[in-house]
Amino acid sequence: MPTNEALARRFLHVNLNSASLQATENLYAQRLGLSRRMLTEPGATLDGSMLGLEGEVRAATSFLYDARGGRNACALEVIEWTTPTIRPSSNSSPFRPGVRSAMFTVDDLETCSGHLREAGRRISDPVVGLISGRESVLTTDADGVVIELTQVSSEIPGALFSGIQILSVDAQATTDFMTAIGFEVLDAPATSQIRENQFVPGGGDDDAICETVRLALPEDREQFTVNVVQHPDTSRHPLPEGANSQGLYRCALRVDGLDTAVASLPKSVPLVGEPVWCALPGTKIDGLYVAFMRSPDGVVFEFVERPIKHFDR
Image (cartoon, rainbow, N blue to C red; front, side, top):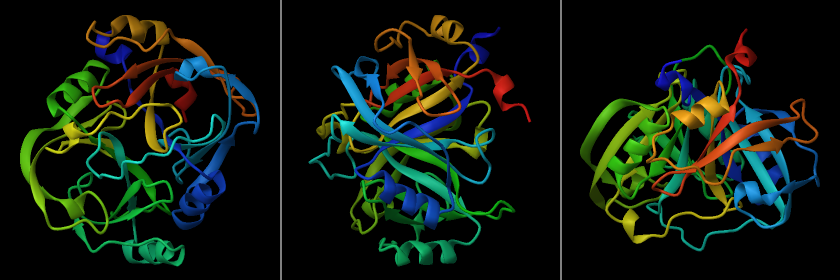
């Protein structure tokens, strides 16, 4: 098998550590049209060492999918931590490193924005979306995640989870890491002037020269993209740390075979610990074999053994 085919092929889910599973499901399901397809057994204990946490951990995990379903779309993996409790950040800067925002495409932006306003969310004036590259509006969820909403014609109902944005200390180092694990560059690195209100709703008109690059996995392509932005202020902030850190934290990527994928990684991408079996109590899946890596921005990526046969129609 060629090396590029042994590495990451598509996004499986993006992890959102939430202070309230119910509140998060209410927003993303009731207002954006996602639906829960799996929920782990509440209160079940797991070995925290696989996530860099000490002792046994307890958390409830809900997998939210848009209308395309589990075979065709990336899920939002929402975790409400019990032991340890969620780790809120005292740093509210929109430029701190890590996964800072998620993009959803909708077929009726005005109606979708109205639903979110009814839920008490503030909607920004239109801006050029950093993930979409087209006119968008921004809002935030209760955990501080910036949501970019962009209108795209579609026959599929509801919002479609279509991308994330990573704030990077060094865009080139992040690009090198991501291409080493299987990503392809869609838009080559470029320099542009970006305003603060493009990063966060209610942001000011101050602007900065930023480096940007857009990437995707081979089976996702334009369906799910990652926008990497190097802002001059990002290097002034510490990297995200802790699997229970509030907000978007970890990205799970499909590989056909975990052993082959790990063996295909260059030496520049060391694993965080050894590959492990991750149990999913209470779901239709007993568990999955996973291996963890950490990007230069502190974003945790995991290879998940999920052969293509599970995605055949």
